Image (tube, rainbow, N blue to C red; front, side, top):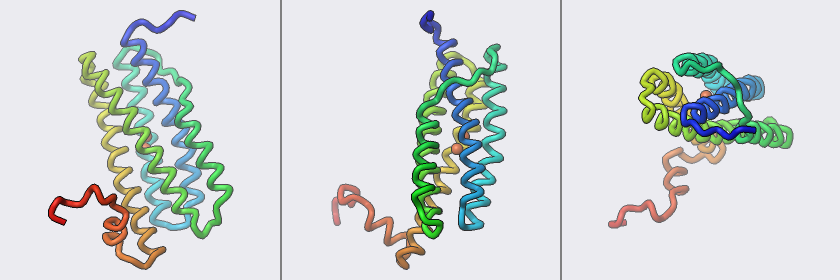
Length: 182
Ligand SMILES: [Fe+2]
Ligand SMILES: [Fe+2]
C-alpha cells in the first residue's frame, strides 16, 4: 500500500479518524442518556448528543471545504474508551453508576480536545481558515462539556461525602499546588 506523503492527505485521514470517533461517541452518548440515574445528567448528555450531531456535520463540511470525500477512518482510541466504559457499566451498581458515566465522559472529552487542537494547528498551517473555524466550534463545545462534566463529578462527590465541593477540591489538590507562603 502506498504511504501517505502529502500533508493534506494526512490531514484528511486524521479528520476521518475524528469523523468515526464522533459517530462512535454519538452512540456512547445515547447509552449515557439511557443509563444516567439523575435527570440533570440525562439532560447534560442529551444536550451534548445534539451538539455531537452538529459536530459531525461540521466535520463533513470541513471535508467539503478541502475538496475531499468524507471518509471515516479507524479510531482505536475512541473505540477503546467505549469498550472500557461498557465493561465498567456492567460491573457497577446503578446506585453509583453516575460517577462511572461522568468519569468515562471526562476521559472522552480530553481525547476529543487533543484531537481537535492538533487538527486546528495543522489546518491553520495549511491556511484553511474555513476548516479552522468549523473545528474551533467543535473544540469549544468539547471544552465547555469537559468543564460541565467536571462540575457534575464534583457535585456528586460532594453529595456522597456530605462535604462542600470546595473542601473536596482543596483536599484533592497535590501539595505542590500550595502557594509559597502556606
Ligand atoms: Fe465531539
Ligand atoms: Fe464531546
